[in-house]
Image (cartoon, rainbow, N blue to C red):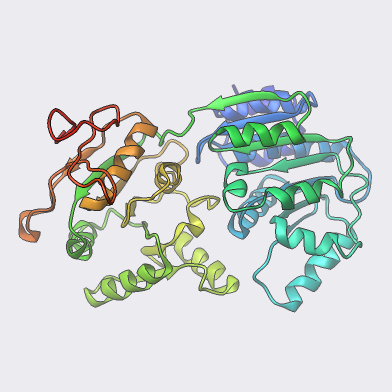
Length: 410
């Protein structure tokens, strides 16, 4: 379906045509008519499917028809990175219109807070905010939400995972009850459905490619010992100029620093990003990465969701994510918008069971390979229980199978 068929404002359709968007993605094709009709919506869609534009386009269309002053749309997100990404997308899609928008997030200084206060008092048409910082402003009673028409919760599962349940309910006490509610989530566990019942009114529901990496991602697992990981990274990227943009995920801030330092010792220019960086430094680094001035970026999950960077060639999971759904989001950084990419995960002996859980979630057996011969052999693929149950294998359905007949090598 083409964007010209939705009946959207011509200025919006023209703006996205300049971005080379002509055909709607499945989430856009299903969500836009529902939102335009005024229904509440709960949408489940994986990273990179175009869900942001799925809610932005009909909401922007509504704003252009609504001439009231003040804040009309509130978008609540889990991270400052996602707030900035959505703000940038609004800037691109609404180019040439007089729609105003303001990201609200923490991590800045006093000047940032003052600038945010001015934008809120003035009444930007769209406010994109993290829960904690928004509440800081709301409690000071200078934010007027009387003309709010749309409340959007993006990455709702992530917000609940990091403890924003109560903050979101507090935010609801500041907005009109008569509003359209849209909730988007990459996954749909029971806690999301329970939470949706508290907020949404007879919502329509959409499920698009739930918890599956994009088809364009080539997924590979290297069975390695920790001591082999840095050398393997060097082997994978040093002589491969086609990998112009490489993202390496690590589970801890400490490891980010160690990986960057080790890569620099081998002659690979790399930069690290974690919550230890000041917000302004994180933004500068992301701009450099987008502009290809930084080839290798090592990061924690601070950017696994909510950062729209096109054409990432290679994603490396230095550690296996403990949460299988985080794997989907990490891998979702590559092969976006129907492009292709490579996702490599380093799996040591203790992480094999966690990796098996990932395979169960995405429904495929990922190819497992040994390191290059010059690095020496890695561990054999063998699933074991966690501490206290060593030596007991799992059969293909994940149940304990004793010492025989269980699931061994694939």
